[in-house]
Length: 561
Image 1 (spheres, rainbow, N blue to C red):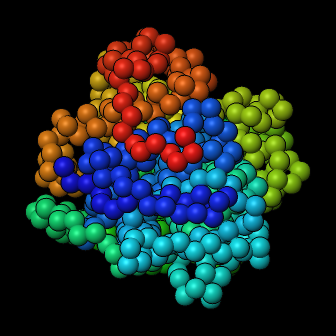
Image 2 (cartoon, one colour):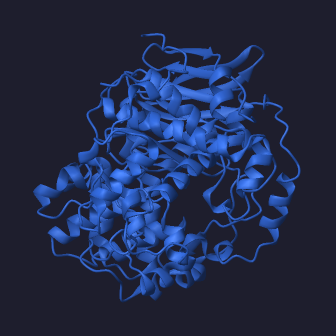
């Protein structure tokens, strides 16, 4: 089976130490990316760890496809114990980091411990493996993402494509703080940025020429690349916003903090409105699909990348804001401050509801600044909707503490089931029944009989996140091509996905999570019965726990265990 190559670099920021760890046996079983990082996290983070404690660990990992020159491979994975959900979470981001990371001569970076001083960590390839330099950077305290990039360029001749960075939100332990790369690409969901903030790590840079020589099968690699380059898909012009009006008109987009199902001003913030503000093409490393959205509005002086569909929802419909430039400003603020646009936007929407202030974009922008710096009402909102809703006097629209993505489980019942059982909560990228229900391939009505399909989708997405392959390459990276690229039959890939999801679930079980957490804040048909169908399909217990016998330890024991 094709897999990432290279050691894990373990950096203890408290001890200012760095060690390389041989993880070949883990990589051979798990490909790379999410599956590898989940195996490491399960075995090396204590089950009773505090998400903000030194015992938590953050993993940055790459996969074998980052050694290719084909489209949809410009991404990386991050994994850790989430301050938002209190369980394991994985998130990935695009941009141009992955090739520089691989060039530094490693497959995984593990960050452990807690520093007394704000640090930048520099990882380079050396004659005997990755080398690490620790730099105290008190002058970057409170710095926004672009200022960190400017510092790294002026002091180290490194660009944003060499960096992962947190903004003030991460430093101030905002529970949905993101880790940023290339200034505008976010490891967004779950608050990994706050994990780095708790460790006092402001930035990590990577450079080198030690990229492993991994032979990528061709075909199909170049076939995928050619098809991506010649596609006339609407997404290449409008990104994920291309179907905004279709979803609003035919299904629903949560509006005014879930009070309504459709937004009357959708055309002013949908795909055409975004495309009108797009001023050039944008892509990730090696990708000819080029679906990113560099946008600007000269009149109001804003330039950003996006907004994508989820941000149009979270800062547009969910807040009752109908001006695309206002949404662009919110998007840029989140990138600069280092926050997940979905959780930030929904949490601000909950606050706007409590203030009877839907549509007040200026208040939304002011509130984002307060959240990132934990000032005034921002201190409460920085905890996320699940922890703030009672004081705000609004309903708790989260699952496992994670705010909902746009695809509404109240009308897409299979997607609602997916949100309920997903180990990381209300995240649309985990299982993704939404595509089948939007297309009509699966009837959006009802939950029963959908568990087997959902299991297959979840397992597939693990493989995608481990290789690492962009979700937007799904029409090009077919199951058959995945078999060719990874050198193993699809049934084995499904098993790999199942093993990873079981490790996530088992870790969360050990933190007291089970069937009571697999629920929704709204009613959909037969949810409890469908959840049991899902457990049966996975071979889990009726209480939502994984039998201990199903889990084996594969990762090297942590040095402090």
